[in-house]
Image (tube, rainbow, N blue to C red; front, side):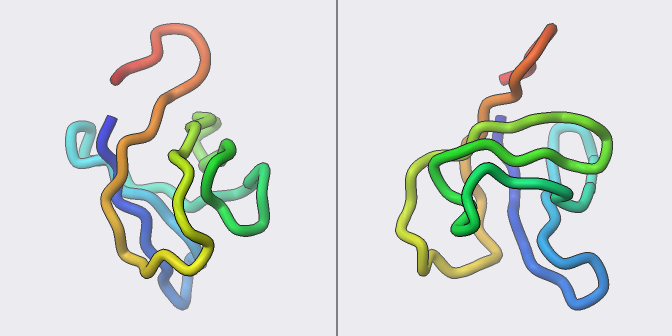
Length: 73
């Protein structure tokens, strides 16, 4: 699924999923640099992110894969 990742002063890192009109903060990540691992957002979803350079500028739209039952793509 396509998601937008951005940084905001009040929420820190967050994602926006246009297809679902969903915006949630990122609460946990596998890697400090974010890319190439999983992230967990406030609603409980776990998403796998693609490999990218650690200095990739935000905001950015990427393809992520939702883990778990009934994963949407």
